[in-house]
Length: 302
Length: 278
Image (cartoon, rainbow over all chains, first blue to last red):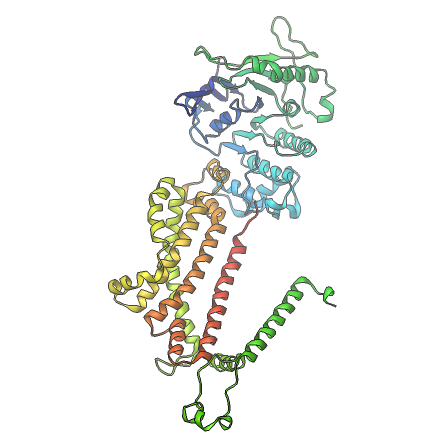
């Protein structure tokens, strides 16, 4: 089996528990992400989602295990892996535009100032920020607009992998809905690989090609990989009509509500903890001989 | 009628009223010198007719201020220089000591702010050196430097270094980790991170330290110049006291206040320029 584009192998994270022992957050977690895929990870607080995210970003080191991207081992942060943090992480003394050009300049050190600005404005326009708004400081923008700037900064850098750490967690439900659609719009115009943490089941179904489900910690693991068999382009209002929607949703709710607890705390036997692939498709059930006739998940350019 | 004025205008009006009332009370409280003709023979014989030293009324101070300010830069020998020249000397000493202190305190504060080991290692020394009255360094400075001018500058240096050093270290250490992570994920080198992320993030705290320092430096220069003598506004105050010219003393006290306010307001402008809202 060829290695996937992003390969997480036998990742283990242990912390000292303050009483001389160690606490294992997750152990031997292994999974892969293909190029161009949009993968969401769902799990309860404390299962180590953010730790995995920080390891992928290169901001922290796992106790053991390795991450490889495009055949190279991940060590330290890199422009190839862009991050959108939950609290936006915009630099408050810079305007929206300058926050984006900050990233573009770091990525393309040989570009002229004009080119940097045009590129930054293009990406701000893609998330709906145009005109005088781009000259405002983050404190003069609403939470939704700030996160749009943050997304524009990340996409403008065209990283090989985009990491989104609960990007909409701090937003109200209505704003969240419109930004999710902005995100889909920006993403569908690119070949961007995205890995996103979320707490919101509906958000994950709307956005993802695949959802990774984590059991509760300690000894959390990525238990399942659920394919989202709803064709793109997706709209929030339309996907709920799709026959697969509630089948998938029910599976996820059931996992998070019950099985994530039942499966928690099981110490592994040093085996690779690979997620089991789950495919729920009422419209195109997989043929018994394994031949797959489903529609391609990825819609190119809308 | 007052209700129609803005808050600022009403406050300004009240300030003027307080000033006028204060000056009138001061003027009225100073007893007039008795004319020679009204004195008894005995009083005249015991020197009652001579000018008595006393706190001058504000009108006299105003006349003095007008004389001094209309020709601030005259120089009629070591003991008779215009107020502008005296203040100029003081500002020169303050700025020389202050700039030297800033050149050391800000980079050094940056380094100890970045490293918690360095911060903890230097902290005991800073805590012992900081509360020392700057004038206590004066004898040592005079002995080692052997130059009163340079000693005064050294005293300014030593008193203005601490607030800048501590505030820079505190500001740098308190930069939000998210912002540093933004720099890290954008692969900025240490210098680029320092100048484009940490410096602007810590700038409000650093400028606050600089503002405190310039205030302290201006307080200390008066005392330092009283000790070293020769020139400067502190020397001028002491010299006029020795001349028993209280009008000049009061006038120079007011000038010290005005210059201190101007220095502070320069840093107020700077503070607004680097401020940001999270």
